[in-house]
Image 1 (cartoon, one colour):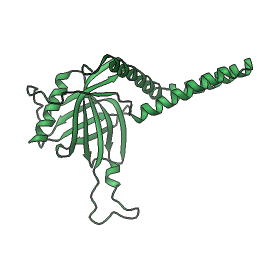
Image 2 (cartoon, helix red, strand yellow; image 1 turned 45 degrees about the horizontal axis):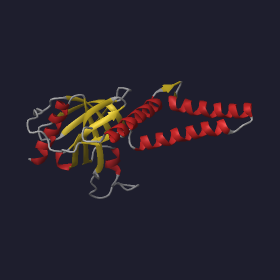
Image 3 (cartoon, helix red, strand yellow; image 1 turned 180 degrees about the vertical axis):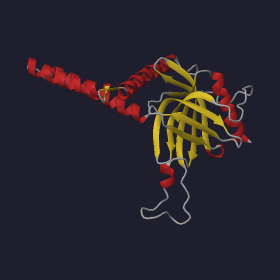
Image 4 (cartoon, helix red, strand yellow; image 1 turned 180 degrees about the horizontal axis):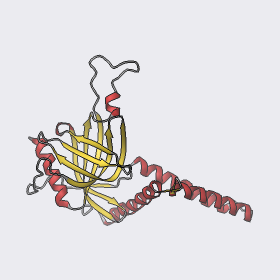
Length: 235
């Protein structure tokens, strides 16, 4: 955020608060319906009530416009994965960062598509454990609210780009890494080259592009993971 002008910082902060509010209201359920869903119903019927009581359509149109604006904002936020990421101008990894040892687990919050056999799901800012395996790849494990574990694997040879920066979520600004990579992990990748009646002869799972955002409470952990992945990537 230090690389941005004051105006851009204010905009990023505002969008961060907006996306956080939209995520919270769409994720929290009350009697099986999201807070956003209840708000939509209440605004609509409140506008209808004011219209019928006053005989003027003005308030109905005002509230209907607010309702549509909120829904459009939610659609945009959902399309962005509720992510507000700002890339760091200097993308050179610090040479003095500590190295992550094999199987050493690092706690972070990840956003991206996690998978398991027959199932995949987009997770947003979920507590995640990341560790390095001896051959240089990195595994991520996340626990769904239901208790089920999902995984993702970043193979060092298939990383397309890695950018340091920060993630804005409400009042929080976390050090972060944005990683673009390709993977065969997940049910969709495994099914892309199968015919509807039978697998193609010699078919191999197609590598799908994935983008992950890793958020860290402290910059030292971010730099350690950044240096660890970069070290394996360049070896």
